Length: 308
Image 1 (cartoon, rainbow, N blue to C red):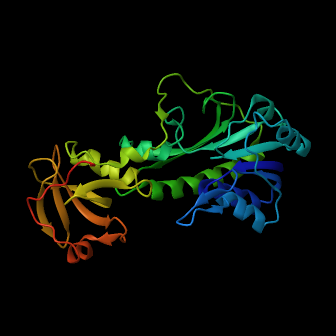
Image 2 (cartoon, rainbow, N blue to C red):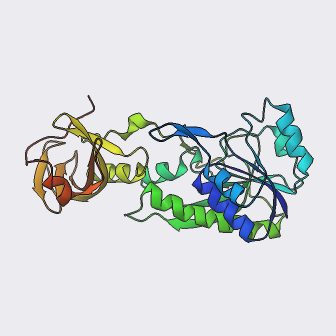
């Protein structure tokens, strides 16, 4: 099938790779413009662009599709049967949505209508959802409001982080799209009004841990913010990132260290306690608790605090 592909990060690159492996003709790849990244803030190509160039695909990086008539003309000239969209990051105006014969199909990492929006993976973990999944959605002008053509579910395990769930959903979404395309056109499933929730973009300010919350909530918070932006707290006046933890029995003033040993640092929460097992000081490496404690003097009754 002759396709246009629009996507930017690794989640999208997984889908592009699957479509190529399935033998589809990717006539044009749309991705976000190169962005400065890393310590040197050098311009970096997106994961989708890097993969596309490896396969000698034509890459197009417009700043906007709404304001750039030339970009819309370039898309129309392809005469693609469908446009596949996955975490692209630009708004597709109605004119573009109407161009392909089979429309624009989006790979969305949630069980719509739950978690429409920018951060469905993180918000599902943060909220304590028992499952997540991927929907293939026929795109329309609204924010993730289009009818669903196919969906697949997966449980969210107690050890799942945003990273592990992201990778699983990327694989599931890629395969679901490959399986869906030969079956088009499909009868669309209109999203119900009941159960709509929105997954707001993750902000760095949300990373700070509030020790007055329950250990269960803080465990979900840490897993939802791993790898970005990473949960943070303060100890002895310095910020510390918390990468892994799990709820344990214990009680005390929230934020107080109850015990310190090679297994972890046990901290009192608003309800229960949390054992911190992987930590990172500013400018340092991620370390298991035993390694972290070997280089840092931390004692019981010290207290983790709020951001300065």
